Image (tube, rainbow, N blue to C red; front, side, top):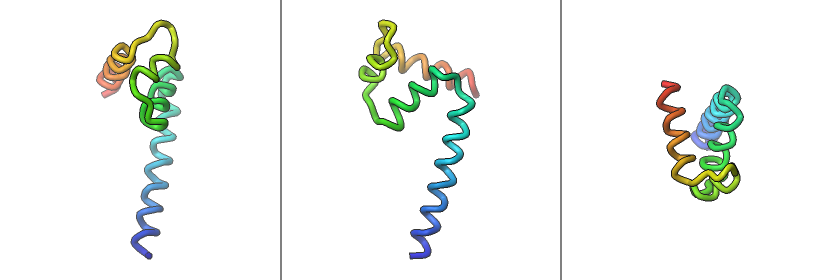
Length: 71
């Protein structure tokens, strides 16, 4: 039971760190990360939500480039 409480506390800490990190991203990247990783949508579904004639592959590459530049 104590271990479970420790794991829950750690998970909450990670969640807060992710939320803080998300706030540092441009709004477009926030939306991409939210749709893909928090909502679990496939890249094509993310592209549909993003609009502007985006494709799943173009959205995936856009996020990949952004993360590479952020390093």
